[in-house]
Amino acid sequence: MIDPVTAIGLATTAYNGIKSAIATGKDIQDMGSQLGQWAKAISDLDYASQKADKPPWYKALGGGVQSSAMEVWMHKKKAENMREELRSYISLYYGPSAWDEILSIEAEMRKSQKEEIYRKEELKQSIMEWGLGIFVFLLGVGIMGVVIWLATTG
Image 1 (cartoon, rainbow, N blue to C red):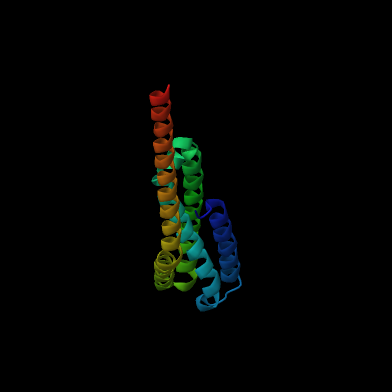
Image 2: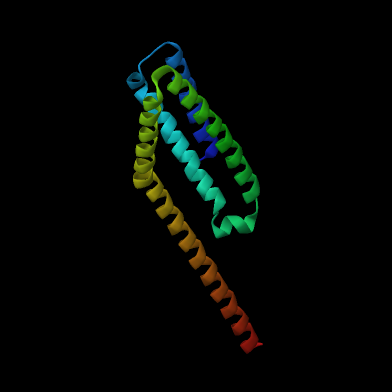
């Protein structure tokens, strides 16, 4: 799964780079790389939030889901604050249409991430869940077999 701590760290780094670029008067097109990194990190954080809302069955059994969900929620709130501050800065220095450009970059990154990385992540998780489920089933059948064998021979 995408680590929310790493995602918020990358988002913060990109956010600080964007703020310093705005402060030095760079053109918004010159910040494309940093905006892309920020959008990717925010997308990763949103994905982690979705996964924390619906944890796999084996994680729900082990507990610790609520602390993970709380951590993701705190990082998501920090990201919302970054987004609002960026919106204010960019709208002030470059106009509201520049913020619309950033929103389109963010939407593009989300789509790209979903098609490439998240699909692979979900496939890997699905394979792991099925494998674990089959293992538990076979273990149960084996235990039942041993119990039946012991009952019939004893």
